[in-house]
Image 1: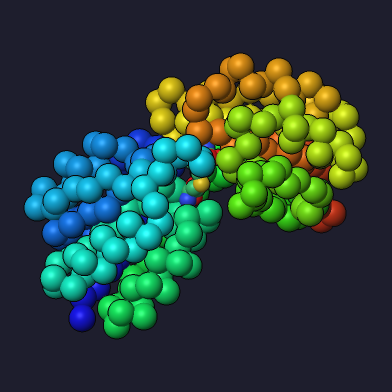
Image 2: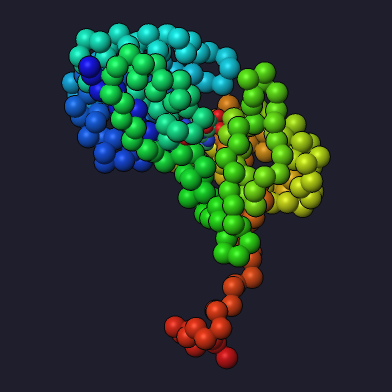
Length: 250
Ligand code: SAH
């Protein structure tokens, strides 16, 4: 019986991996790595044979069955196997399928969380996903379904759409049909967590304009309260009875 560690690499630059994830890399014999992970992470796994099993959208893909076979093959040899996934392994990473395969073969599985793209985007754009009193819920949604159809609705105060970059005009139409007003703030962030991250601010009505700006880059779309620029919002007054730390200017 071997151990397979499913590690979240974080969304971008290598230093966004967790310390625990880096420790697993340091002791790995084999690393099966996703396409969106930073190649610089190889330096953290000096002993490991590094195998790229990248998937991007629905075009170029290592079949999921091939990944399963590689996991089982290397685990059966007793190797310390790390399955390195972009962002967090539990978010749109097909972790459930890989866990099932590994466990069914009698191996132990360990999951180490990572910074998911939504959180890195919120950090880059400085758009907190929750807002006191107004933004009480966040939904992570894939804009892509198995049939490649767009699926968008209105489920939370802030919605974060993954895998939507190629279909922003369609996303905008569906969100409008689901009841989001045309003036809803939308922040689009591509390559979140990388030094060349870009974030742009839109309204729902003009979201299609973002397509060119983020073309060919992994992109998430923040919709609703969490997409508002905090510096544009009115400051929240202190709670009754609270003492202000500094007196207000006269
Ligand atoms: N497990 C990953 C998500 C994998 S699905 C995570 O937790 O982040 C792949 C999608 O994630 C991409 O289509 C894109 O929508 C989003 N994504 C991944 N990395 C990103 C990044 N650095 N910046 C913006 N979006 C990213």
